[in-house]
Length: 131
Image 1 (spheres, rainbow, N blue to C red):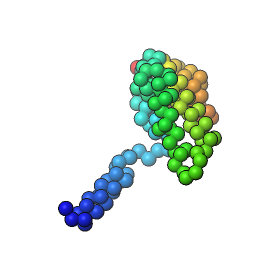
Image 2: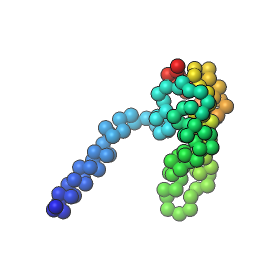
Image 3: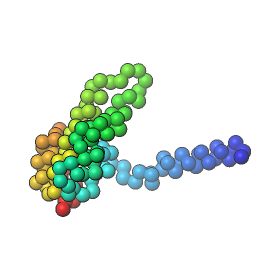
């Protein structure tokens, strides 16, 4: 195979991966909430975002993906970034490992989990469908 063929294939592949079609919704909401915002109709520890249906496993599962950007820069990791991300992981797992079958459950779980430190739980919970 010629080197020029390999280079052309690599350029085409990177163009496809980086194209807007690869990520059609260009929102600013966190990736986990994007993935999870479909339907809330689960008993405690049963939502797909509650990894392995266990709070401790959920925290372990999501810690690295949610904190990886703290370690991208050269040099030592930023401790405040890592602490902030760990707090987000705990809030995420407290929320998604809760029993949520209707908007009232969602608002309660959002308040208790502190998934929205400064946001309105009612507005947050409007974005979901329920049982």
